Length: 251
Image (cartoon, rainbow, N blue to C red; front, top):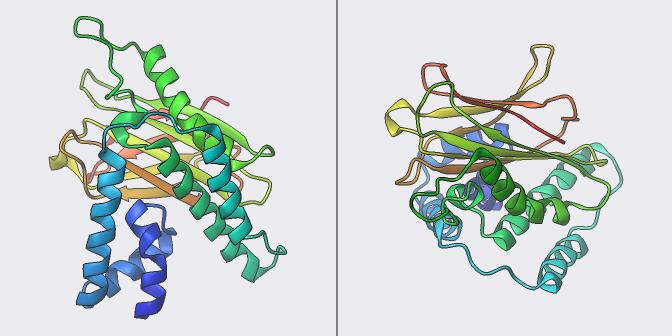
């Protein structure tokens, strides 16, 4: 992959929504190209600032509509061809990125860390589910009226302060979208791998979490050229393959 191709994909890479195969090619290129590596670092810093800044007040609904309409206008849907599949996937990436920016999503924001109840009144699982759904709702609305969405909480098997949330959007275009957040994970057990599984032993890799914020949080997303309707279980494993978080998506 040459410099122009890498730089074309760096925004997706910084947001954690680059295609699984592109990630390896990008990282191989960044290992030797100082110019692209500098641009990647700048984009990653900007993405981190956006993702983990205090959640802003909800923007006017018309602003959301203008942003999504502009994205769709600048990236019109092509005919369904092999060439169109790649472009359609990139449109999905742009829509996910735009929705994340609108929502001001960070790992803690989705999980209610910044909207936590007063001391002495711990957040219940139902409150966490509601907080995750409320934040994810912006992405769901931006995805279009013909999509189907499922949201779920990710929980640990033991009594540890790890948690997460996941959103899957199934689109008629065939380019489905996944957004997963985690929080409270120990850095020592990383990198972490996120996958979706169905009831037949099949798995779809979503992302590798190599960097966590100071509270053990991260947000990852991917556009998948596959129907994810049957993939209702989310699994997060550590570097040794041990399951640290699991959850079932609820339509």
